[in-house]
Amino acid sequence: MIPLKINSFNHMKIHEYQAKELFATYGIPVDKSIVCRSVEDAVKAYTQLDSQKVIVKAQVHTGGRGKAGGVKLANDEIELRRHAAAILGMDIKGFTVDRILVGQAVNIDKEYYVSYVIDRSTKSTILMLSKEGGMDIEEVARTTPERIHKFVIDPSIGVPDFLAREAAFKLFDDIGLVRQAAVIFQKLYTLFVETDASLAEINPLVMTKEGTIMAIDAKMTFDDNALYRHPKIAALNEPTEEEKKEQSAKSKGFSYVHLGGEIGCMVNGAGLAMATMDMIKLYGGNPANFLDIGGSSNPTKVIEAMKLLLSDRNVRVVLINIFGGITRCDDVARGLLEAFHQIKTEVPIVIRLTGTNEKEGRALLQGTHFHVAETMGEATRKAVELTNQHQD
Image (cartoon, rainbow, N blue to C red; front, top):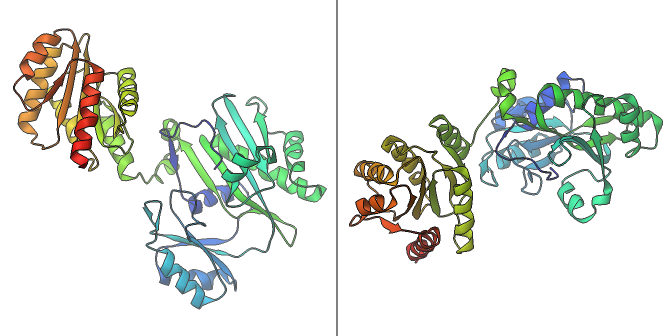
């Protein structure tokens, strides 16, 4: 996918085979393929497809499958068995392949790239096209952006015939092919809008040697906030462990995003949480997460937040950064003390309290195992220092 300004925290991915089913429902031509979860399933699919050559593709929620060895062509049943066995169980960028797609091999003449994506900078949908379809579209976007054509779609008119044809002429010279492609572009746009998608991508869209145009790959992501309107699509959601954590945190009233560093952050207020992560980076550390616990000093909330942070095995130090406005620092300190009576951990905890009743709050924490700091800089430096000690 070509990176545009999409917020990675608000869209749900589906697998290629699921996207192809949606494509077919909207009349977009796709290759005939069957999803399989075992080598035996793949052999059955091979017989059903009635095609000498088949393509075997890993089904995972990440790109780069081809480069990782997750896409193979099989010329007969023996090759199919070998590829299916090798791809099932393979690890691709941290995702384990538990299903594969076995499809009829298509006589490809040329490959193209087509997608609709939400672009924040123009506040609209953009149709993107390129004659350079296939695995390395990101590379094309980076090195030769002029080879990618973009059309800003006006939502009040959508993709009328003239626009669909103008776009198709960027890829094809032959009027017959232009007409075929234009219809596909229009159907893809209808699908994109009607399902509240944030991305609908065909890479590659192929022209076969027989002169037909079809989608032999399909990728779609959907806006989380609109899933309530699409129960069938919502049912396809397969959240990762990290996404499950984020959903669980949301149900408890936190805003949590996993970032993969070593310093767990617990902060009240989104702006302060962002500033805390910036400070950690400034002092040479890596934040493990974004966590805004809101304005409450409720011990139960602190316990839940702490459990969430400590469930991340990478966390070596926890930095608690609280600004007491309406929330009083002495209440927060009592909440923390109560919480840590229930949570036993060897992970060092750095606390910075500032604002209403900060002196009283800090006095309550004196003599405890917490590392108490007055300023944000002091707290962050201490957290990074402790992280380095733990690494040694």
